[in-house]
Structures are given as structure tokens and as C-alpha cells.
Image (cartoon, rainbow, N blue to C red; front, side, top):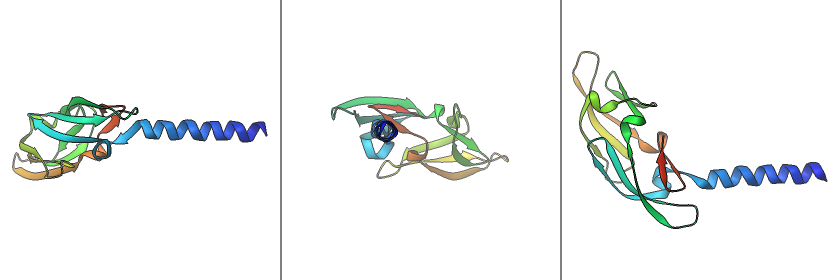
Length: 122
């Protein structure tokens, strides 16, 4: 019986952690991009909303004209004309490849961002 209650406790703890960390688009709205900084209103675990922001240079990199999730990737050094897709789920840019030619590039922000109790994190 003790093993069962311990297992249930561990499962509940894991589920509460998942609930506290939502995908970016699942828990945030009213987004905008200014330079490399993403602004959003995100839901906290208590149901309230909070304004938050994150510099996407902390989370996204350009490698040969393609955007990838990467800690401290500094994508904006080699990308320009960046914006958000209509539903704000994608970052869309023109990024230089190894030959310095501009390539159309995009990345789904849910791959890189998490709403952690109202705070955007990589």
C-alpha cells in the first residue's frame, strides 16, 4: 500500500509540473515582436494573466539560413526582417546562410519557448 501511495504522489507531482509549464501558444496571447524581444500576456497557474517578455536571442539560433532552438543563439545578428506569423506561433525571418545569401527561415516558437507560471523561458 505504501508503494502505491508513493507512486500516486510522484505522478501527481509530475502532472502539476506539466500544468505549471505550458507551451508558449497554449498559455500566452496578445503577442508582439520588437527587434528580437517577444512580448506576450501569459497565464499563470492561478489563472491570472501577466505581461511578460523574452529576448529571442536567448532561445533561437541561425545556422546556415535555418532557425533552430539554441540557448544564447543570437539569431538576430545574422537575420533581418523578422516578424510573427498571423497566429504568432512562428518566428519568420530572412537569415544569412554560409554564403551570406538571405534565406527565408521560420521556427515554431512552441519548440523553443515555455510559459512557466507566466514567465517565458527557453
